[in-house]
Length: 218
Ligand code: GAR
Image: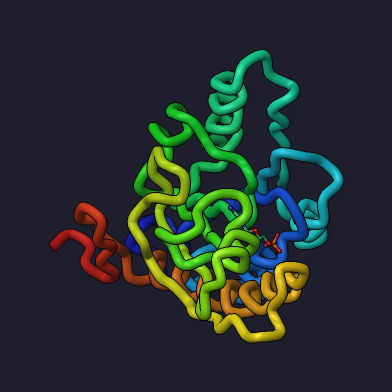
């Protein structure tokens, strides 16, 4: 079955990671040996650092990988251009930032804006940035969660695709950031798999801040 995003079969995904890659693994598991059924397949995995479990997961799955480290480039814009070029080589229909801990620049967004998705461990627009779980705990919220959204030129400010809620309990002390993050990630992995699958299978349209699923060409 062709995806509305690609006339040539399942949508092509490039996934970007910086760490353990459990969200990447959830996508790999959901696709399994039926990319047609899921509507998408991962064609490559990119990272901003070496020696991470996320890259090992990709290699185990037999996927090509690439690494673009900021420190290997003279300027941030050069790194951004290199990341954009490495990603473009795999002709993705969608790019998924799954725990990729870098803000991309102008060139990357020029190439992939409107088809670059991020997953964030808080209910945006609350607690954007690198410490979403810690910041929500410190604020004393009673619920937090995760947000899958398109990336724009702000920090975690793009149009929201899907959100999942996780309760914060009395047991969640500021020292318990990792435990809360694990509970969020259980919800997040399912949310990301569901959101990416729906975008790929049903198509989508972005109108201002609103993401409409299944409205291609209307
Ligand atoms: C996820 O919780 C993701 O939301 C978060 O990193 C984790 C990656 O987990 N991303 C951010 O905080 C980005 N600001 P994983 O490597 O196991 O998929």
